[in-house]
Image (cartoon, rainbow, N blue to C red; front, side, top):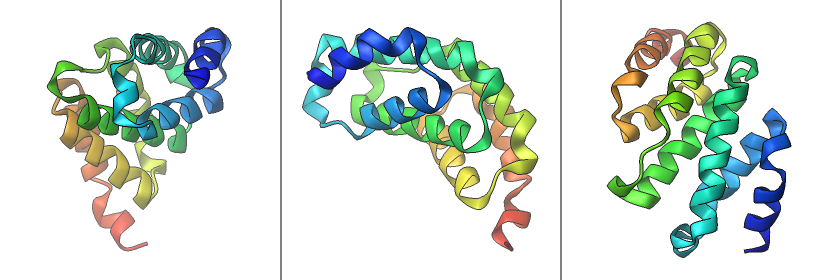
Length: 138
């Protein structure tokens, strides 16, 4: 609960690294915490922050946030779906950066796209699938 309060108090000013670390922390949080209203409020605020900052994300940040969203979808189930605008903004950034994705970034992002099963991720998934032969050989 203390972590949630701290995140709630600082999310509007969070930098990209802070957003990435916070999304990772929520994704790794115990499942029972996900039923806390503050958890959902912080998650929503972080998604809004991702949307606002997406154009400046780097490759690891993009892949890590997608991994966190996929993990959260697995934990929270079908009752939760990420904000479409945040996903679209981050997917656009991922497409822009696709040529720079390393093997781990590709696998984390494709895993998340498979977990989320949302049409707005199709172009990103296609871009990253095109990278598979190259990253597999590195």
